[in-house]
Length: 164
Image (tube, rainbow, N blue to C red; front, side, top):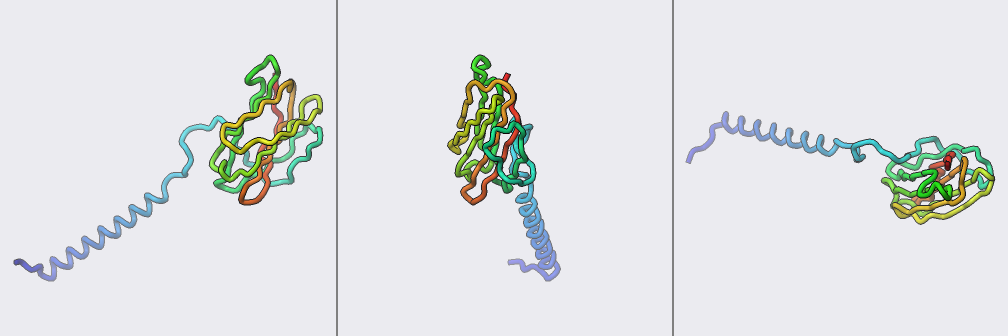
């Protein structure tokens, strides 16, 4: 049986120490890469405006400011004028979901039609839920407010949607 002399033992110890440091560095770097976001462009809207009070349900067609939900709790909606039917002048609102959809307790939608009529609807916080507002020809103000189970209510959309 061959015993290692002191020089071989020190060399093996240095190699082992260097290998351990290298493995730790690689594992730490691997955990810090990626943003958690899917690659590619997004076709939906993600509001990113500073916080202000929620809008009132008055018949105003002037959009107010929106609020940003906390990081990791972002939600997305799709607003389309004239879909699914241009004949009935429909306004289509769809809850896409987003990273924070499972934190949403409730969704309140306020639509002020171009004729001043105000429609208030509650939407179930389930991805791909849809709401169709009929006879909404012209410029319509859509304000969407979400309440989170962690606390807080945020107006995430308040904008004009034109229905042809």
